[in-house]
Amino acid sequence: MEQKVVLFAFRDDPMCFVHVLLYALDYEAKGWESKIVVEGAATKLIPELAVEGAPRHSVFKKVLDKGLFAGACKACSQAMKVLDEVQAAGLELLDDMAGHPSMSAFQEQGYTVVTF
Image (cartoon, rainbow, N blue to C red; front, side, top):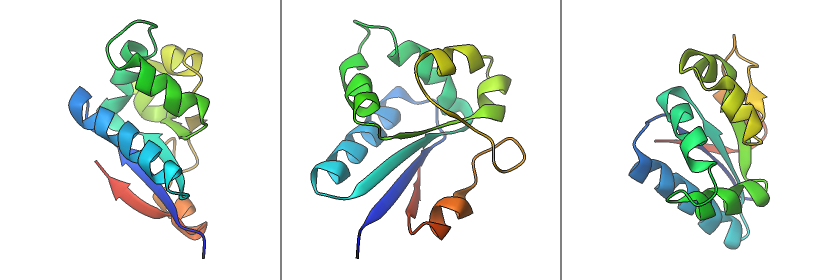
């Protein structure tokens, strides 16, 4: 059975978010299918991390290049006033549950959901 995990990041704590990125890379390196969904206040971190040369940009870019981001919450990106920046960073906007990403949709696909 294939192992699948989706990490939902809600907090706008840069240290916590970097750990989410590292966990996704670790799961992927061990053969798991791993995805990250950026939710809530964490969407505010995307514009900062997307800037080349910024602290932690390299790990953000590595996760992005490996396709480990499922996307970011459209409603929260809009509420945090970073919608355009999130899209420009290359993240898909997720809105399948009244403007927010659905956890159950991932569970129906066999993912274990972990929240931060």
